[in-house]
Length: 126
Image (cartoon, rainbow, N blue to C red; front, side, top):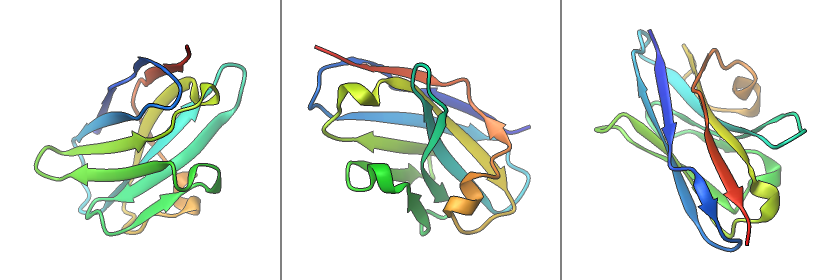
């Protein structure tokens, strides 16, 4: 059974950087993709980025391209989302999600996530 556990959220001031972690385990397929999403208060869930199991395929939503970086540590089975220059509008619950049997990451694959973590809350405020 796939399990995803996010961590790293908290209260931060505008302009700082924050890195979220997602520990992933239980995959039965050789290929899988892990994505990052967020849901701001009163808003729809938004896809941010994803990365393939090998790390050689990544995708970023246009809205956050350049400020967010996704990367992984295969030894630790952990995927990270580094967020720079945080803004109050980045306040949200951040989720990692996964889907199997996909080698490449893309916007289309972002819509095919099956497994979800419980989320970690990020608040950007003075």
